[in-house]
Length: 298
Image (cartoon, rainbow, N blue to C red):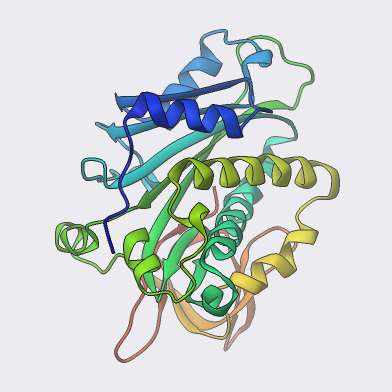
């Protein structure tokens, strides 16, 4: 199967604009330092509320960010990277729940694209790593600030959701990162149901995810995280797995992963009882397979 790659930035921008009519601004650049950083800066630099929802994507990021301050590596036109900014009226204490919520939404949308027979091969590792057959396909970074102007309440925040998804060259990325990763080209080439053109259409994928994020943020504002508990369970890569929970490479405790609670914390049943994980490194305990990646509920 041909590699899934990015079309020219201007062309991709126009296609996404046609599919995201509800967004105030859509922009796709050839290069930027970080799409998250840029949208955060705009909210700090007196950008008015009527400029959101907004989407910013780029073919290449010179200072791409991952969770915990990690550097996000991308290959030329082989990584789909974009961020969305939304306004939300919500206390700061409730914002961390958006991290797993947004991961659930991405996994749901990608599952729709691959077809029903293969949905279980796509899963989400708390808080929001997207996996294909256990290898990382995509990662998210959620940040929030109070806007510089136009606040409509004391709890008005601008939430920026950033996503990076490997489109191709998983082998090269695996060697560079020294861990197994997956890419969207491999996902589609592994599936029987490839007739869905949207799965190969990058602009359609971006629009699906951006719209789904927006609707999920609105639903979370209305109903809280509780409706998302079952949705998380449907895509949970850690369900029923023995896991180690580490902090700064130090083992905190081990136990059986048992989904998330109403605060979106990972629940782990240990010998001492049920514990909630707010942040930490989560590794699946297995003799021949370990998924180790920072899980940070922020």
